Each structure stands twice: as structure tokens, then as C-alpha cells.
Image 1: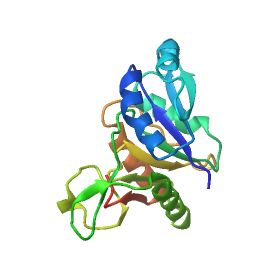
Image 2: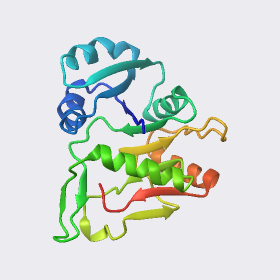
Image 3: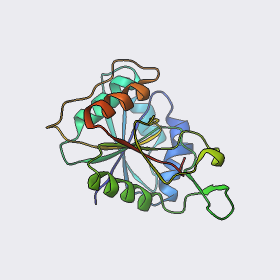
Length: 195
């Protein structure tokens, strides 16, 4: 299964390199596309060269995270499995069922494939991970139905035949996006033991 890794970023090339890119390299992700403003191309190109991952830079005239996320979803054709990741992710954690503690995930690529496969089986077009790193509240493997899907690590199945969902706010745009997806598709999915 092909998964397209994408990162919307704004004026944070060093932070991106030191966090999310470092995490993707650790997990042997081969390629990532980063969406940035046109006037930042030089800064990002300079910071993200000569890495152990193929970095593609796409520029947009869109301003604000909500608009950039809309642009990314429009950018890819139907049938694409797009994993959208924030530019400041240091690690992905999962709950150890024996100890009850959170541990670094051993294979994020395998996790992402599993989540996209489940979303295809259940006809779900948006999935994400648990918002908080508190294992006490992480009781269920998968949470289906009306959920808040935090924008930090989200899977998007692109289907241009479905009614387009856009958000028109920048702060808390992921709340609005989760609700609109639930209204359209009657379901979203969250990995309840991963954050």
C-alpha cells in the first residue's frame, strides 16, 4: 500500500528537521513532501538538504494552517492515502498493555498501513491518534464514531467523488474538520492507544 507522507509547515525549517524529519528517518520513511509558503523555499531547501530521506518541497500561496490543509487534500488525486503530520512531532507513542506505560512505537510505517487498511475496510476517510499522552485515558484500541481527530498525525483517504470538506478557520480547524467529516461520512476513527 502506498502512503504519501506530507507535512504542512510555516517558518520552522530547523524545528521540522530536528523533530518530524528526524522521526521519519529513524523509521526509514523514504520520502516526504513538505508544503510551505513560496517565500520560504530557500530557507527550507537549505535546511533540508543532504538527509537520509527524499524531501520534496511544494509551495503554496495559501495562508493559514486550515487553508494549507485544504490545499493539500485538493493536491492529491482520488485513491491517495495521505498521512498529514505536523512539523514538530518528536515521537509516536503506544500504550504497553503489560506495563500500562507509553513507549516509543517500534514501526510507524506498519501502524500507518494498518490504520489505512482498517479505514478502507470500514469505509472511513479520516483517522487520527489519541490527543494526550496520558495512558489512563487510553482504554480502547479503536474509537469509531464522532471523535476529535487532532491534526498532528492524520490519515486522509482522498475521494474526489465525495462532497469536498473545507475548513475556513485557522485555530481549532481540526475540530471543525472532524465534525464535518463525521456529518458527511457518519464515521471517523481514532487509534485509542497511540499518541
